Length: 77
Image 1: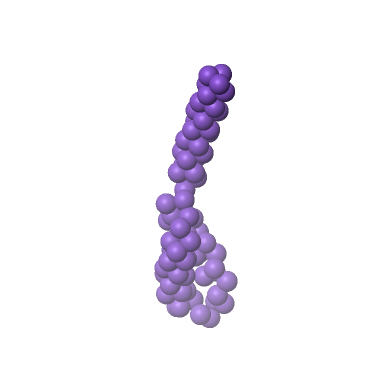
Image 2 (image 1 turned 90 degrees about the vertical axis):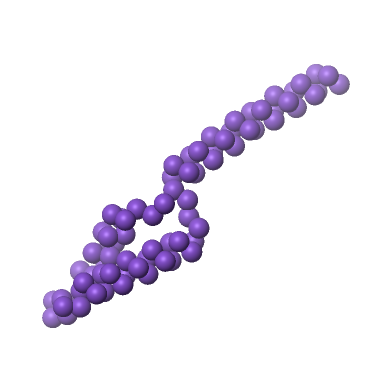
């Protein structure tokens, strides 16, 4: 669900904002930032694009079936 590469990239960008005289803390900050980001994203209950696309296709198919059934009922009446 959560792309580790994207989290690593974001943590790299955030830790690169640390001034050069604090570079010894940079690796600690990076790992802490990554952990905080992962935790926050997990709490948001996000879904991947693939899961979203699958559910969208399923909904479209279900709506088509519903319309077909409504038409059949209307024809029977």
